[in-house]
Amino acid sequence: IIAVAVPIGVLSAVHQDSLFDKVMSVFVFIGFAVPTFWLALLMMIFFGIHLGWLPISGLRSLNYEYLSGWGQLTDLAKHLILPVFISAFGGLAGLSRYIRANMLEVIRQDYILTARAKGLSERQVIYKHALRNALLPAITILGLSIPGLIGGSVIFETIFAIPGMGQLFYMSVMARDYPTVMGILLIGAILTLVGNLIADVSYAIADPRIRISS
Image (tube, rainbow, N blue to C red; front, top):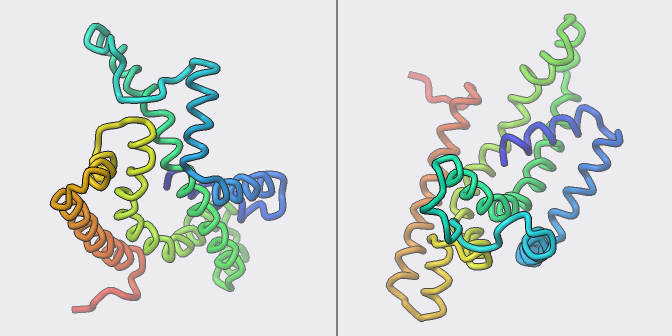
């Protein structure tokens, strides 16, 4: 998500109101508006049933054990295309929009104008000076998004019949298996603490102003 959302947000901010920015804005609004489960079912019907390009459930085909090493790797990749796209779609839209808003705010600052006045190339101004400061507010969001991995996995693991913690949580709720539910919720709480810790440490690394001096 980060590898795709950050470049999209940066390019949308640098080329504000361009065709690329408008297309990405439409994409972002669709990502916010479309329910994940509905999009998953739609893509399963289109790519899995009508076109037959991608498998729609599980992680392996029935003949997985008889495939070569490269064939097994390809089979796993095909099974992961739809679940990975569905799980990343909403987060990709939100993060790219957030990066765009931060970049638009940063590139209007005085130090960016000073960097340009000193003769630095536009690439150096954007990626060396502006991007680092634009990513600072996003660090908190990325840290807090770690617990959301479990919540998001409940949807696509159940729809795509992928064995994992999300599917286990759903089956435990349906079966009223309270100890298992409490265990998964405890893991979610631990991930929340870990996410906050990672966000704090990353923020201190990225922004020297908040480091504790010796």
